[in-house]
Image (cartoon, rainbow, N blue to C red; front, side, top):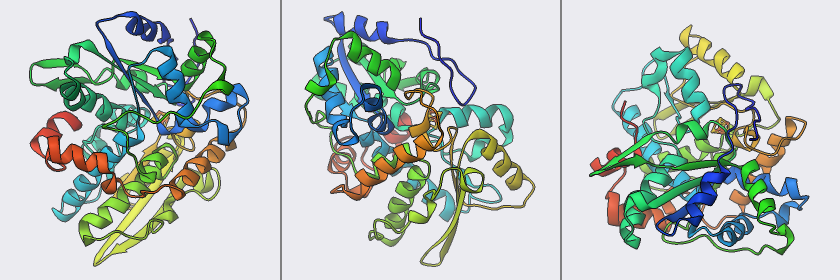
Length: 381
Ligand code: SF4
């Protein structure tokens, strides 16, 4: 068994690849896989691939060759998380529900676990939106299972994540009608993916770009930058602006939340934005030591923000504990730049313009924060 350690310091990695092979071998099971945005920035390092050759399409090809029935890109559900979280933020802000404490993002299980154990009085300030991993699992076992006529209990939902903490997050239950299982059945890391490619004797140089399956195939550049520190905030603000103003901001209007250097100002970026007469105070932080400093400042009344993004790993998920291990923290910063490059070159830059997300709301959830959306896409604690 392979045991490695998470830089967050909380978890060891359990090898779950045998569960994947068991699911593939079971003719009763439909295996549906999602690939997180940060995975594409690092998997090729293991095989010595150049950045331009280590695409997400080649991971799709590898997983199909291993026997997965459907493969999707988690960037799709990152857009879904933004739809729910941006609407939740605008609702909380305009209803006066944000006081001395900001709304905190909740898509990083390392951070959620930290705040619950170390600052339990702040947990009610967390967004209730599930993470992209969990939202994708929930949509697979409801909307998608219905579309392809498979019972949710016969569907095995697999995620490929840059993260060790996602293995714990996947334990979250999905309650939907009579079905009470898990959003995600098997959470694998980038390292486990590369071991599976090797074990399958797939030559990475022989892989081709294969597009993700439909109807959850579309994703925006906003969804892709989720993997880098500041990316969730930037994506959420693009959509929050359009909810308030009924028009899009320039796509790079919220660029000041991006880090300009690795670990500048204790891994914290602060920014102020005006949307009509609304002035927003924003902070983005990565690394749990940096997060502790920021939370203490908020508690002492020395800093006041409306919306704060927290990622446990320095640099965000690109530097996650499930990524290939290489020396040098700056690597995370360089991997993050790859995601911003993909965003800048995306046809769609706003989560709310993702056509498959629009169809999902039209056909299934009706609107963000609807009853059904709360049931499937939010935590209930
Ligand atoms: Fe996991 Fe780290 Fe990303 Fe948090 S920041 S979701 S702990 S990889």
